[in-house]
Image 1: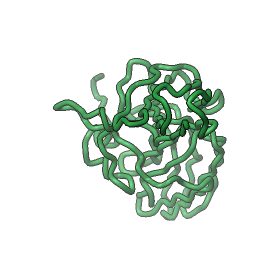
Image 2 (image 1 turned 45 degrees about the vertical axis):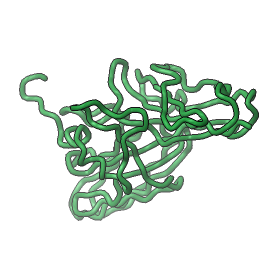
Image 3 (image 1 turned 30 degrees about the vertical axis):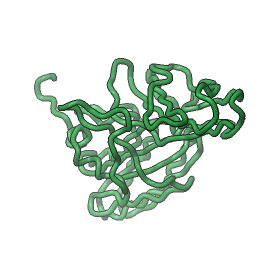
Image 4 (image 1 turned 90 degrees about the horizontal axis):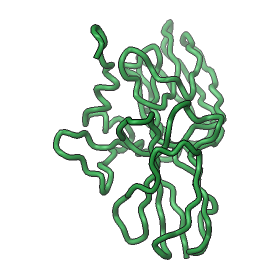
Length: 239
């Protein structure tokens, strides 16, 4: 660590168990990925799917929600209501935690506005994975998680169907990031690695364990970075 640099409280909380309660329901340790002693558990944005038009309110230097749940590459609009008179706020969606004193390049950077005011932040969609929501001005106290599920097409077929999973596109993919994809096969309670460090934005999948439900989740990261958490799951049914 360079002299004078210090982690923000947001990153410190992400690396500790208390942030796990930031969402509407407490995330759990990933099945099959239980941490060893001294490692933090994986985190998830464990809330109900959000509508394509989302309202986020800032009041008393706090967001009214700490968890969003979306689908990859799907347009959405954030209606942002800043109720704090004379205070600047915004919504900033990042592909990784804020970190030290320099944030990651935003997936969505809503313009900073002085309250009271209501503005809209349109987006063509987010890449799949676990993203991080902050107010750029008050990132130490205003933050949350954004879970973005990948897309699978078709959602059902035979055991010989070639399914396609998509987790990003050239427009919304953060530069330099790669994706890890895990699968939970029929009859299994655990996720295992299917693809790792992919630069591609999607891949074909042919059921390889017979009929049943296959579930997938993804994590976006810079190369050589560890896993913090995963996207919401998406499933397909092979019969």
